[in-house]
Length: 257
Image 1 (cartoon, rainbow, N blue to C red):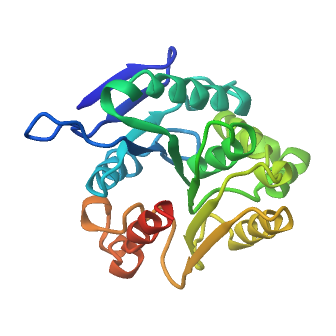
Image 2 (image 1 turned 135 degrees about the horizontal axis):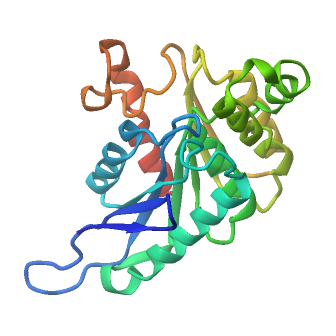
């Protein structure tokens, strides 16, 4: 079952819901759902980190939803608070299908990629009462110092969209981590040339300080924005890396713990 629904003037959600009826018309048990927050630097939501991720979740017997949240091209003044509210509204919308489509809302997990990982980490801080577990794929966290420096010295070098993105990244999820955060799984490559490994390590250390269960995977080589690291999500051959594509199975087994 596929559903597309507007959340507000700009944002919309796509639901990829599995069939929950057996051939003999008996009902299946409720299934978990994975809410996907694609990346795109807050300038767009990447199609490579949207439908392919939802389909991968379906193949692992999970419902899936993709939130195409408002980006700064649509609203230059969009704030982190507004984006978190879009996630909250999306979760409320998903819940309206819970009974009919056998969605286990107690197992609503969130995955975010890059900027979507920044948003997912923020939601782990602020919406943890609605979330079961959080997955961060090469999350754009630990950028506050860089963004703050831009504001202090080089803001005029950025275009309007760059200034808006810097403002969003100033909201650093690391600063909001608490013992209320949910179990978190992170993966990225050590040689990512966009998201610094240091930021993720700082985030992991902060989670450790609050005794939040964390699983962290650094793959030795590879760039940013790999998505599934398979041919169906690659824009050039270097993004097809079989070893890294194993992150989906690693995540799936972790979600089932």
